[in-house]
Image (cartoon, rainbow, N blue to C red):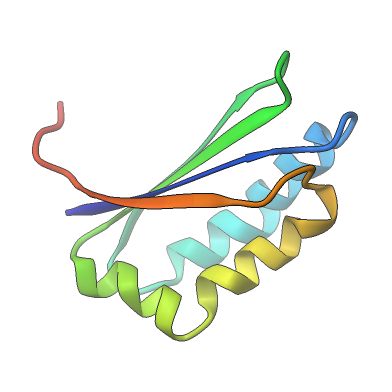
Length: 97
């Protein structure tokens, strides 16, 4: 399994709309992707920072979303609420509980 971790800072006052977009648009879109296992949306509301972790069955499934523009389209859904760019890293999942 592989995980993509995306981090960003969001605009003051944007957390409710950001959360709604994740729940109503981004998470359902991820669920529809072949190979998607989980999406986590984590926030540090005091610092107005967020982290999104998506878990995929394979590196190929994760990479398909980069290659076909899916990942970029999801970022585009929330771009207007961000106060920074999005940093992303890919990790191989070696253990879980």
